[in-house]
Each structure stands twice: as structure tokens, then as C-alpha cells.
Length: 587
Image (tube, rainbow, N blue to C red):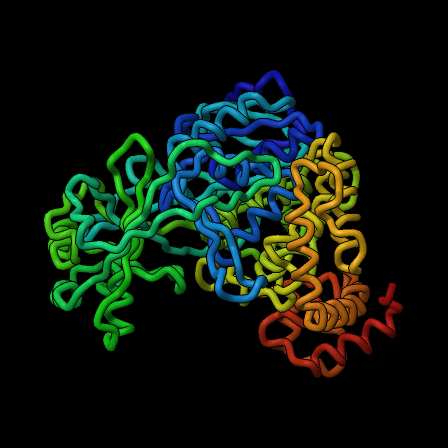
């Protein structure tokens, strides 16, 4: 069959225009690579398919880290913010995090404009059908239009589109999200290249017409004043922000669900894949927590110029008529009009233990994966992976070593190490509890941890370097009790108050921070012990067949990564250490 070969060749092709794809494309283009972003529909770039919010516990820290590395999500979220809060202000600094509701259309438009204006970046509406390979070499992407795009590297960010299947009650519809066709060709293409695939499930709640909600029966959740920002490079919005609202299910809600549980595809056996345990459907909540008399629901506006509300807490795949009955059982929603039904969606993913820590696949050099294809859930997790994949695709083209963040450096490092070392059996979501060094990984010090990297990569404009150095110096002096940061000259976009706050937290928690630093330093000894890629685990004397299989599946690159593989015991690590010593494997 004849193909049309696109006349321009690229350094990086990014497949998918969701949150991972946008960050990957902007990163590689920002590093000077000839980049192509390919998406099914230009009008759904950066679409907030589920909750129009950014941030939250663990996630807000990720967005601050993205910003420090030169990512775009934080700036776009600040630009489109309609309500915002700093969470956990009554608790310690390690678990505080910003969260913002965004105007979903403003967010989309701002990200699309950023892509259109980026140097070195082309955006095209087309659908990837398969990877273009010749022998074992990756050549680019073949599309449904029988067009071939040549590239030195490819980043797959396919979201929920790989063989996507939507469920509403007993009705199943093919789609990557509602009213958008799935991508059916890439899964067989990946399997032909030797990749293992699996199935996962996620879902989204119904949307309501806000005019039909009785807010007088709900509790108001006004935005913080002033609202927290994600980006160092944003200015506070001048517009009036909006409130969110809180209500709860009632005894009638449990009755509706229990009477109709046999009609739920989740419980009838129609859905066979695993969903996110930490973001369960309302059916799961009622069944698994029957002792709870009610469950909290957040009513969140989706934009300044729409009456549409997102019903956070009522994710379900029950039939549409049952969803309507369920609404009648919730205080304030007795007369609410549903304008979009809730649904569940199943999709293919590629288990992430087939990746390197750079997010490059082991099977196909030059092929990277980011976002839900790696088994994660959440805009922030996807964007972070996209940024790292885009950076490392560019570095591979340049012949440079990949950027790999440690678990003591960033939540992004924790997430990627978890994915590659442990794999997933349900959609992975970031929590502060996943980070053993979370007191080091605070939202207030993300720039101190990572902005030097962003500047060196060229993704943070060099014009900010001088003031950033002054900010770092001001924080350090304040920590040591020297000249107050307030006496510093202007360090915009950093402020003297922020320098003093960061220094004060460092002093107040110095005992615990010093302990965390010592622990991290000790673990780095294991990180320095490299494992040759050619090592055959079956040659390790005394190692069980089960542990040998675990090492072979993950193929850890350091002793520390090997120790984090589920099921690997301290005895296994001791045997591995002895074997590496015999091989001369220590750096």
C-alpha cells in the first residue's frame, strides 16, 4: 500500500494533545527540537475531560515542580483560575498544597495558544494508527490518512483513547471520551512490537445546570483571598473569583444504589478492569462503606460564562434514569437538571515496568510514553510525565544523558520511580504519603529544588537567573539568622516575604529535615551501585526463581531501585550486592 511521506522530518513527534502531550511538545520544542504535536481534534487540545481543577494534595506540589522545570500547566491554571485554596493550612508544611478550579474553556484556549505560538513546534490534526518501524528501528508514525511522519523519537500520550469503551448502565459505546472516537490501531501496533498491554477503568460524574441547584441548602466554600498561585511567573487575577459548594448524599441515596446495583456495569461484571481505588464511584462508596450515613459532594462551577456544574463525588456508571433518581436523593439537588450523564470508561494501557526511568521504552529505543498509557490518572501526573518524556526525547536526539529526578528531589521522581519499579494494578494517583522525603518536597521550595535544572535546560527564561540566585541567597541568609530577607532589594518574581517564609519553615523543622537529608544521603549509596543491563538474574547464586523473575521484569538500573521492587526481600538485595561485587558493578 502506498503512503504519502510528509515532506518535513522531525526530531520529536508527540502523539496526543492532552495534558501530557502539551507539556511534552512544549518541552522538546523549547529545547530546540523540530517537534510535531499530532492530535485527533485541535479543538480538544488540553481538554479537562473530568474535573476542571488543577492541584490538590501531592498534585499541587507536582504543578509547582513543573513550573520550576519550565512546564506550562501552572501558568495556564493561574490564567484560567475561577476559585482557589491552599489545602491543609492547619497541618504541617509537608502536606500543604494549592488547588484551583479553572474555567475549562479558558484553560483549553490558553494552552492551545501557547502551542500555536511556540517556536520549533508544528501542530496537526491527524490520528496515529501505528508506529512506523523498519526492522527494529523506529522511523516515525503512520496515520489513518495513510500519511507517514518521520521522526528520530516519538512520545505516545494517548490518554484513555486506546480501544476506549464507555459504559452507562447496560449501554456500551466505543470512545476515547464521550462523543470522541477511540484509537484502535495503536494497541495492535504496540503488541506487534512486543509490548504487554492491560486494561484500566476510570470515570466522570454527571454535570448539572447550576440554575436548577438549590444552593441555599448547600454550604458555601469561598475562594481564598488572596488566592494561591501555582507559577512564579503569574500575576494574581483581577477578576472576582467564584465559590464552590458542599452538600452530602442521604439515606435515600444508599437505597437508590442498592436497589439498582445489578444494573451497574461495575457490579454486573460488564466492567472487568480495575479503577482508581482513591477516587471510587458512588456505588463503591455505598457498598464498601455501608456504615457511613452520607458522603460528601462538592459542587464546582466549570466556567465563568456557563451554568454548568461538576458534581465531585458522584462518579458513577449507573443507567441514566438511575442517575436522575440518585440526584433527587441529594440535598439541594432535588430539582437539579442533569445536562451530561456520568459514565465509566475502559481503555488499554502499557504496564510501566517496560520503561526506563527516562520514560523511554526498553523494547523500542527512541519511543517514550507519558500519561494514562503508563497507568496513571490525573492531569498533573500526566503533565509531569509529559514534561520529562519531552525533555528526555530532546536529550536523546542531542546525545545527552537523560534527566532522572531522585525520590528526594521531586514528587515527579517519586512517581516515575514508583511506576517503573513497582508497576501498577490500578490507576496510579499521587499522594503525599507516597513520598518518604515529603518534608523535603514541599510546595514552597519547589523552585529551590528544581529551577536550576529548568534554567540549565533552557525551559525557564535565562532573564530570571540573576533574581533567582538572589532569592536563594536571601533564603540561606535568613536560615542562618543573618540579614532579614525583607532588606533585600526587589527580586521579582520572588518576594522577600516568600524568602522569609521558606527560611522559617526550614528552621522550625530543621531537626526532621536534617534527618530526612541524612536518610536520603544514605540511600544514595545504593543509588550509586549500578546494575549492568546485561546482567542475567538467573546467575545470582541463591536467588529464588520468583525474585529472579521480578528482576527480569523490571530490570532495575541501581541497587536502590531493585530494593523498591514489590516482593524483593533484604536477603535478595544482599545476594544481588554480593553478585555485583563479584562483577565489579560498583561505580
